[in-house]
Structure formats: C-alpha cells, structure tokens
Image 1 (tube, helix red, strand yellow):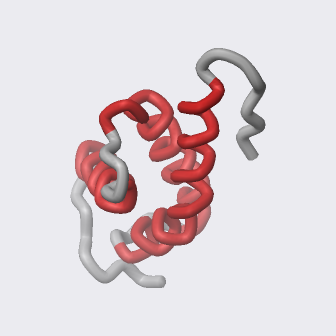
Image 2 (cartoon, rainbow, N blue to C red):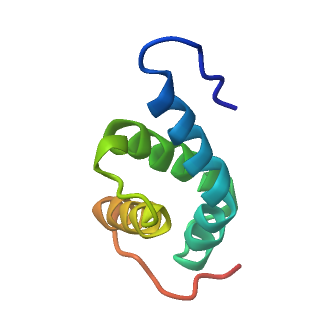
Length: 88
C-alpha cells in the first residue's frame, strides 16, 4: 500500500493512493475480462498504478474510473491483442 508522507507534494500521492484503492477491483476485473491470466493480473495492476502516478495531474475530478480503465486498456493493447470475454 502506498504510504503518503507529509509535506510538499503529499496531496498528489494521497490522491493517487485513493484512485488506486478505489478502482483496484475494477482493474482486476477488467484485466481478467480482457484475457489476462490470473498470474499476470498483479503486474497489470502495478503498471496501471504507475500510469496513475505519472499522470495524476491529467486526471479530471469525477473521471478517475474512465481514466484508469482507459489507461489499462491502452496498456494491454500495446502489449498485444486484447480479447473481449477472457476466461475468468
């Protein structure tokens, strides 16, 4: 779990933590639905968390879920074909 420190720059880290924790279940479900093997879902979730960390300032309030799922889908598409309805 991310642990924010007090001081300058802590607000974005807190926001990143909130976004990741709020949408972690959706990240897992989406990865499985798109055919990611269970053993690889943790890696996908970490990659998405890194995108959120890098792009936090671009995430519009109220549109966090769309950003997270869209980023995840683009990441998976760049890694290879995405299949709807993976076994899971």
